[in-house]
Amino acid sequence: MTPPPESEPRTLVAWLTGTRPEEGRLVLLSALYFFFILSAYYVIRPIREEMAVAGGVENIPWLFTGTLTAMLLVHPIFAAVVSRWTRRRFVTVTYRFFMLNLLVYFVLLSAVSDGAASVWVGRTFFVWISVFNLFVVSVFWSFMTDIFRERQSRRLFGLIGVGGTVGGIVGSSITAVLVGFLSPATLLLFSVLLLEGAVVCLRALDSRCATLPAAGGGPDAGDEGSGVVADGVADGGRDASRAEPSEAVIGGSALEGIRRVLASPYLLGIGAFMLLFTIGSTFLYNIQADIISRTFAAGAERISVFANIDRAVLILTLCTQLFLTGRILKWLGVRLALGILPVISILGFLVLGMAPVFAMFVVFQVLRRAGNFALAVPTREVLYTVLPRRDKYKAKNFNDLFVYRAGDQIGVWSFAGLRALGMGSSALAFTMVPLAGLWLMIALWLGKRQSELARGDGSRGP
Image: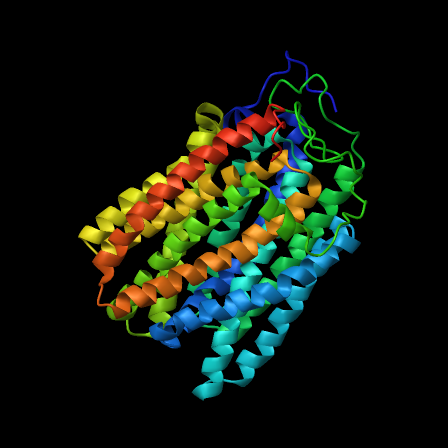
């Protein structure tokens, strides 16, 4: 696909968003795909949070342990499926499997309304949603890194993320508005329909990519890239994924992703980045559970508070993604953009340590989560665009799921242990400051190494 003539005028929308005329349909489809994914999740996220609080704050560590155990069981199955099926087939089956699970929970939650059985259904639902949200989002970003070029991803991933942000706003609004009229079980049906919308978008994207000519190098290789990576060829410099057709089976073994992570300093660095982010998030999550349980008593009121915090996060994320994310990545580069969230975390934990109150928590939580969605996530996904296709699906999935939830485990049990020693929310927040400092150093190293790989300096491998 050739770039548009230089004389072709750019529209106001293209100037504001950084897109090019030939990219419009693909970006729109990708954003719509992400819209359906995150709206499906945000419909049920507040329900999960309420079930965690209702089941007792002291049980949260065990919920995270159950989630990690589920990840250990599910990841090899997913990797085996990836090895044997085309990306179109395994992504479709993955989403429809989760749709079936949602229907099962619809029946369970409708049948059990109170008592010990309700508590246990709630606990299993928490674990399942914690697996669900990472899987569907990880698969989405794997697909994005497979079809867009490295330089393109810097401009477009933030914009594509807008679809997910709008979806999150819509999903949390559905729950915030309807929770007083519909049961939590009934709200799950909205998620089922939204996930089917994601499948439709995925299939349309895959079909369109399969009809495009192979890209890679060419006249736009030194520019910011036009079009998609029709067969997974990186934009200029290093050939990140071999020119495999979209209908090709990815191949490899079920444990290949784990081996690749352990053998690659670059992939280990991404895993460490994920691990430290998750530990900090888990500490903040536990502080949240403590503050919310002390501040609000009623279950419906807590669900509404969680939904409204989600909306505030997503509105701030939306504004950043629309007008700033692509420009920040272009002006500052991957290295500095990746360091923004660790800096926010250092400052936020310091302030929360000095004033561990509800208002301060909300401000920090909104800024940190918005910074993650608008900057850290698209920048982190850019790190994978310089890697082969198998790493984009297998090694990435291992980092996104197992390493992420391992961070949950370290964070939640460390939090419980420190609290058992008598540390309050203030002291616990302060313990995260040096960890966020280490996180910042890893982010800066990853950004530097990604730039080397994007330029074609693969002498040391990833």
